[in-house]
Image (tube, rainbow, N blue to C red; front, side, top):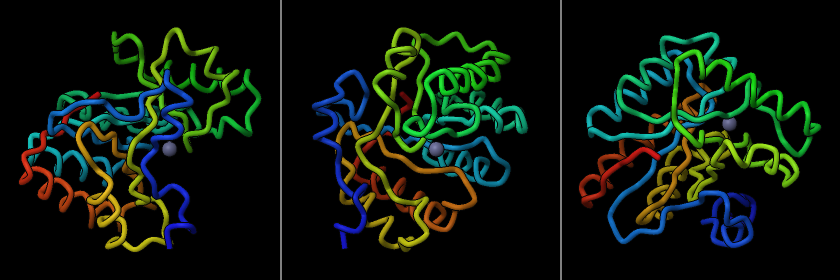
Length: 213
Ligand SMILES: [Zn+2]
């Protein structure tokens, strides 16, 4: 089954080639970095925040600029509850299919929304949608942004994968220092709702902490 699902692997190989990106934090400590992409949105982001609160878990939310524009109160809530936020472009663009100037401008538009809330973090965290960014695009943002990829993709966004398989995948692949991707979105919600509570309970029992980037 795995050969049909090319993202079901831990990303040791790309990490070697793209060492300026964060893939995982090298550590012996029991710490996991949960990340949630594509919010902020009503219902799903709120639900995630509630789950994290139960475990005093901190996480990182890669937000889409137009969603921040539409739901600023949820964006504020993420920050008020002590989580990190990062830029995920304004319209969720695929870098491989987007001209560099358009891509750069789209990152700026998202940043404009984020900056309304006077975030002073430098460098700013950035996750390219679909993990797709060209080297020539990276070089234009490299000074201002830290690109954050991942170590574990749960596949929650893929409706071909059952919630049970998503949970199994997340449990098996996560290790010390893993950066784990979930999505606070309607599409991902069946797998997200199944997996996240189990994930938090299981790894908390194993003595893991959940920290923001
Ligand atoms: Zn995304």
